[in-house]
Image 1 (cartoon, rainbow, N blue to C red):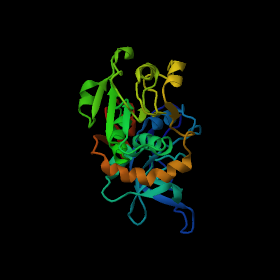
Image 2: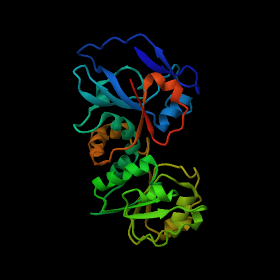
Image 3: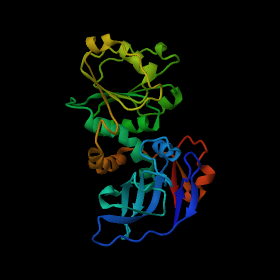
Image 4: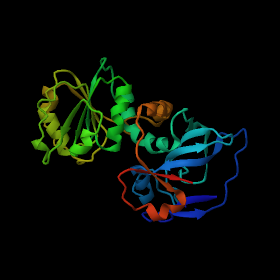
Length: 305
């Protein structure tokens, strides 16, 4: 069979032929599946570079998840850090697969489950006792994860979704109830008229979040969930903001939630993709991985056999 393989950290993965693994016995806890599609998420690149804590052994097969078919032709979503995903055949524990719901496109699922996971896990495991028809503010709404968060939080009961981002044109195209363009420097942005918000999902951190905290005037409790740091890994938060405002701060990511919690939500995330409009995806043959790996793309790349 063929697989993508990294033999030296930081080098472009190569498409090579390797020995076909044996099929697990019928009574085994393992299953062998045939790859349909696997997405190139940021964590996939970090692992291939050897800079992510979860990838420290060479040779390394890129990919952490995807869509595959079982021996009887059924589509499944699979998640794996141990074996990698970008191989024609993948052998992994049966418990690490989930049926792909009918009506969910396999290539779309391969591209979107990972970025959708961030907001879904934030809402399901890091927010609590939200009122009916709650309001969500998304800092970084034009990122793929932020864009997917819009329909996902609506599916979970949000009645009002507000987006913050720098790109005014991209922001305008999103299904948001209110849009706030983030200015440069961030301190020029006017958050003072934002009003009441129940949840803040933050993909930015850095100066934009610090400025938001300074101007936030919500009269109701705010649950702030930190997810990403695209605007900086440090934020100079004034202590008075936490004493004078009813803000609860949490983070969302591995450690803040557990892997068993994540595994328990995969089926729900897959079902929730039915609420998401079809996204533009860059579909590439796995055999061409060496040609396109270092190309910049505005859309998520998905490799197919």
